[in-house]
Amino acid sequence: MTKVVFIGTPDFAVPVLQTLIRDGYEVIGVVTQPDRPVGRKQILTPPPVKREAEKHGIPVFQPEKLRQPESLARILALKPDVVVTCAYGQILPKALLDAPPFGCINVHASLLPELRGGAPIHTAILQGKKKTGVTIMYMAEKLDAGDIFSQREVEIEETDDAGTLHDKLSKAGAMLLSETLPKILAKEIVPVPQDEQKATFAHNITRSQEKIDWKKPGESIYNQIRGLCPWPGAYTVHGGKTFKIWKSEKVPLSVHAEPGTIVTIKKDGIVVATGSTTGIKITELQPAGKKRMAVAEFLNGSAGGLAPGMKFGDEDE
Image (cartoon, rainbow, N blue to C red; front, side):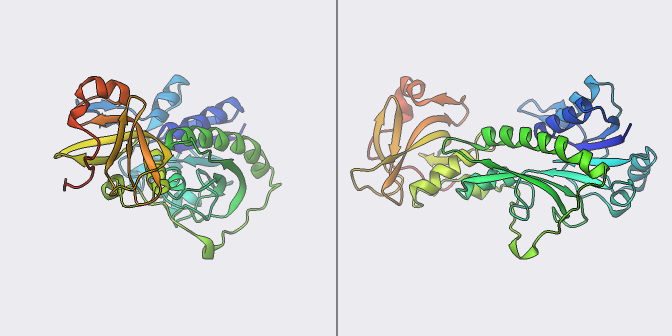
């Protein structure tokens, strides 16, 4: 039986671990990030991969830094035949990359060499892409630059947000690994180097990317809102207050108004002018300090003082 060490952290990686277990590999250890404080009460919470491993009685190791000699030695002592990684959050050191007989195999949420980095799912939607996918590849010392074994395209639908696309890609990655790993172990597949000339990057989301610039075209703002849902969320400001915008629709604008101007307020949505002829109808939002809610519920609470003709985004944070 092939001995596997699995290295991963978030929800995205859980189906990959489940697939390794289901397919009969001997998962001899799981490496994941340390427990972190979560939420307003900062409750110390184990990562999803740890919870899944513990269900199956698999030993879990949570080093703060994988490159520390004692951390590395502990993993190497397991002597895995292959290491499988998925969304771990750290680059593996060369000593670990070189150790397993079948190397270190990674499941990445893009069609490499496009969208290397930590936020490929968000970035695919932010950029308005119509398709993305998953890649099974060798790990390398350089970020997401290893040779490719296999890839599978996944369509990005107009209504997808980062959450729904995350789930699609997570399942696709697990399925593709299930098909590809036996071929790797049987040496039936030859990895192909990436074309460095075509490499693009998906860096972690910054706070500046979250603020809506209503002067941008409506299509771009629509992609921003869905690309940042359910985390971290796009936001705008009015009257010194922050409003997170969770769901929206694109609508044609029949009147000319300055970008950010509230054109209409109805129970099914708040229509806002943009820098193009496509307006944004906000259908779900979250006022500062309150819960996420549909616009109809928000309007029941006096609409927060909003009215047609008012503008979003004029104030500084």
